[in-house]
Image (cartoon, rainbow, N blue to C red):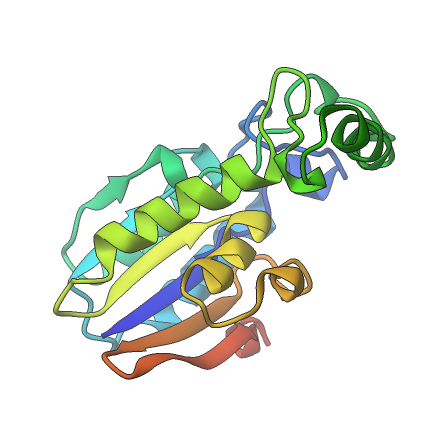
Length: 201
């Protein structure tokens, strides 16, 4: 069984340099629509049993382009949403604030930094758990499946599939409309490709 990971095409917010997370839900830009069509074409000869997607617009619109070529309906799943940066979503220094918050709160509460939640949002561990829960549900599919998600969420999938150590999963590149493939076998999971964007050339 192969899990084909696709990151959504460029969104309107991406094109403007606006952070989205879960709180900003924009559609694909014109460039993003072209990227989604090209990703769909790259996968048109794959035998696909099901297509799952984050329910956010940018992912669903990408998934629907793939689904058109396989006569399948997209199955939306909130667990594939991007990391919820909560009250920090619209702040330009959100990640700097989060790093400081993780450092201070982990010491104050005596917990790991990845357990610290962003105010109004989630922790890195929350994000990982929902991706891992999803993976555990779909890993028994008999045929190949497509998952359309986000940069952060797709990175965590490599960790959930135990293909990449947790400390390395955030460094896995995931460009807009990139295709990655993980093969699941009884002997273990194997990465076939990561961040393939040849279809955009």
